[in-house]
Length: 117
Image (tube, rainbow, N blue to C red):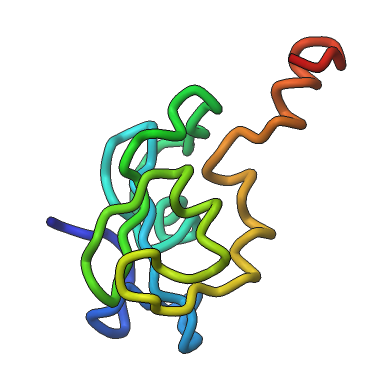
């Protein structure tokens, strides 16, 4: 499985995010390709990123760079910042970038005029 970006090691760390905990890659909805991070996608993909919608959270779209397991979006978001397969720690700061990858319940409410579904 090919992962795009500017890697610095074989556990999906890149030049933008390379702490001990930066061990995930994301499959982007727009192109179906795995990238090391949103900045790698922005620099290399040649198109604008699209968010996965709430009804697509069962899509395998997150690669654990430690064990190589593909996680669904729901598994990743509910993981408690650890791979459910190998227990590798994920960077909790990645939650700050959720909007680059995934629609959230707040997004759906705003798009629906604020009503709760």
